[in-house]
Length: 114
Picture 1 (cartoon, rainbow, N blue to C red):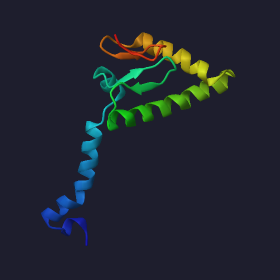
Picture 2: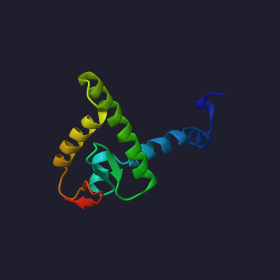
Picture 3: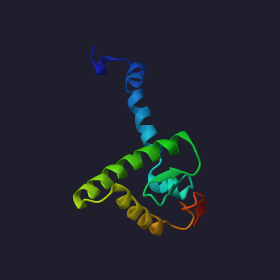
Picture 4: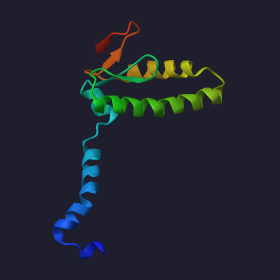
């Protein structure tokens, strides 16, 4: 049976999963929003961490850190340096670029709100 031959209620049910997926994507946090809300902060090692633990924040942390790690590895291999040095340099720059109200992790492990 084709989609157009379904009754209106059944057509709605057929597209409901797609609507739900779009809604989830619309509500998903991006990095800047999460940082501005104080959920995620920058660290000296170049990676982000959750300041306030929540499933959404943790998922975003994993996603962002995986992308950063890939980028740091490429830079490290290209320049023949240790990936931790690339991360540390990136962390220093990202902390310097952090805006007032955002959190950064100090070398002693404590979070500081700028």
